[in-house]
Image (cartoon, rainbow, N blue to C red; front, side):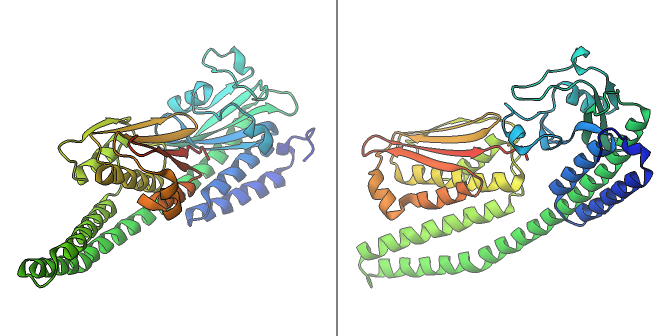
Length: 381
């Protein structure tokens, strides 16, 4: 597209691109990739407004952005930004006031938060909210028309039309996600019932039979004790699995860890110190459930095997990462021995963390206690 020709001069081009957006909206509403649709909407917004830059943001409900799609900047330029926008400054104004915003010079507005390191210089701006009724889904904004002129009423009308399409795409995708979550919850309930009614009852029966054998003298007590201990542990693990299945989501980071501790038997001599934010996690519910499973295994290992008197659980996060540190003053272990036999489920924990681009690190030595750290990156896209 020639930069010296405003797209409004080509009505057919406008209609063609709006038709493409309409088709993309249908794709998203039917369960397609919402991110790809948002990327395309951001691109078309910039092209039709003859803007050098355009972006589309979807808030995460906690003051930040769940999605942020950019037109006019290369992948390399985006990666060199100190950070992506988080919904402050002028973007926050659009989301709070839920009204269009047009500025000839952003820097003249006292509400501007300025640009982070690596951000290209921008002058004029036009932004509109993406909303249906009173429900806000996000915002679209453009910066710097290629002809150097300020954005006008026609630009704003076009942007508001595109925002309407974007609202339909996001609303449709959210409805599809809700339907998927409902189906998953029904499946969780079914699996939980089958585990409880079938496997657990069978395990109880085996355990009772072994108990009778042990006390009747038909088998050596020393041989049966480890079997019964392992059996009881299996029953407890499956019980905990059912509780996790029935847990649709954890409201805050702190309640997740508290729920874990409540499901474990904490020896009277073990003092647990918990430092965790009482706020929603920076992940989707499914991702956070998986991270909680990693933490659950690590905490359970410490409670059952460390023979510790103090267990410290600390959770910290910044804009880039989410970190759980679990430290005990127990007996510790030989790191090389554990690496060779994948002991304590460390291999499984590492594999789970890697699914989300994270890792699990551990430090321990005999008699020196153990420190295990789970680090998961926080992704904006």
